[in-house]
Amino acid sequence: NAGVTQTPKFRVLKTGQSMTLLCAQDMNHEYMYWYRQDPGMGLRLIHYSVGEGTTAKGEVPDGYNVSRLKKQNFLLGLESAAPSQTSVYFCASSYSGGAGNQPQHFGDGTRLSIL
Amino acid sequence: GENVEQHPSTLSVQEGDSAVIKCTYSDSASNYFPWYKQELGKRPQLIIDIRSNVGEKKDQRIAVTLNKTAKHFSLHITETQPEDSAVYFCAARRSGGADGLTFGKGTHLIIQP
Image (cartoon, rainbow over all chains, first blue to last red; front, side, top):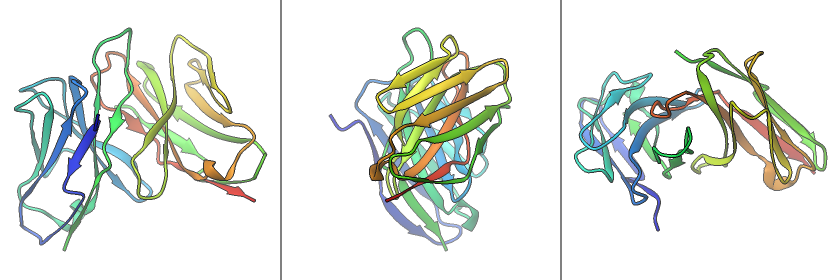
């Protein structure tokens, strides 16, 4: 059982290039999330999805797009990368059921550098 | 939106002593408060969480307390060990469960031998 898997683990881009980060989970979770982590800033929510075909904006969505075509996958796209998007990106997923809020399970992260 | 403040940013304690990390939140609708431990270069890992219908929760050497009136919650680690050295993050989420977490900025806990 792999849990939450992110690809790639590392990537270096030039300003203006585009790329897609992939998150896959095998826990049949309904909810999926993308966060970015910058030094001294904690983790900040970029976008999230409450189910296949749905997405919503988080705290810092500008410059990113997402898609959830399959329940197990959540893609994060950078259309035109900027140096300010240099960060570590974490994907997370959680179950939607139960009596209340459910724990989020994180992937290992993608370290992205924009030159 | 929600705002979570975490203190201190760095905490150094002697091995065997206790460590306390405090967080405050702003949104009275928040009702789920997890704590994550992150070692260098690794993913955040959930160590304990508390929901607003509970005032305190313990798991071996780790405990979390919640004061909804004052909007603050704390992480307590007793009998600290070298492997407790890491960055700890508190977080909060509103009722409903679909929204993402709002994180504090983290506390770097250093256990001195």
